[in-house]
Image (cartoon, rainbow, N blue to C red):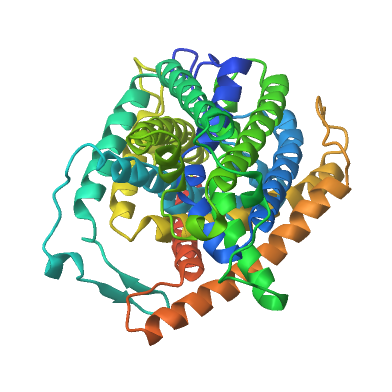
Length: 490
């Protein structure tokens, strides 16, 4: 298969390097801080039953994610090309594995992220408007996918409709230009970080805050030990990793970053340090105000904490979450379309996706197709279905990417490395081994949850299997384009 990029003339439109270090850091922070920190802690508390273990999970997830980002930063400094991890996997494992990654980004990872983040935006909007919903008979209708589970496309259709509208709006914003999209990202990232700082300040310093005793008092009903504790930690990590997810998106737009060999590694490092500190402090604030047993019953912990601190605070935090998810969705949409753009440029996706808009200098066709599929994914299930599916698939490729640093050091020993991962080889090995263990426990938990739901007569889906199935659909597509290219070269 000929994977050489298409040649373009000097007069052909191209992507422009317009993003500096500040915008890069803002893209990392904005792309990571979305809905997870506001929506997942209550579920995680119910999975653990201990505020201390809950804090440990958030710290552990932050450290492991930082190890992955540090490892990825060395690769990004070596290969500062638009397309991000697709290009890295091509150098590490060859075109087939790279294609599967690019297909996974399109089929579930990034489009699923767009759907999930905009889903939460729409959920919180119900604090201010009433969204139309389908009748009970229509909302509960489902169809069964063999070996995967049940899909309920019309459940919460009003929420999904508003989320779809937001996807269309932000796709249009980024269609106009990456610089405009970057400006939108900076504004909303600063706004949501400010809102989170105000919430933490209120929790610790207002007289209506909490007590230190809440930080060490375990649940009176949830007490885990042995294998159940490890399974609970793995389940909680799935929520934490969703909250931390998005750190690698900046590598997708390396071709539009000024001085990418320097800017991308520093953007990843500073961006993830900022996110980790904010997340840990936010969870300390949650646990400081709400006892763990109250957290386990809370779907939206941030709103409950804000309401406890200040009357009407729940609506205020709803605005903060909408700001946060708006900015996160913009960051994902901006970055992800560049992967399909690159794949089209190397002849493994339809040619049209590799075209640059002649006026706006953006991958316009890739943005449009990404938006359409994201809207369709909204119909596949609930927020938790989307996030659990995409996180499982993401971590398969995160593990492969981190292991790839050992391959690149062997295959490209003399390549210039303006940045090297600190603690090599321990840091990447820790990340790889942890990822494999985490994936194993995730499958174990998925099967347990599915069996319990089926026994109760409820619709259910094995999210990890659903994600892998979507990825494997890409296999015949790859060989179709490979055959097409071979016939074209004869």
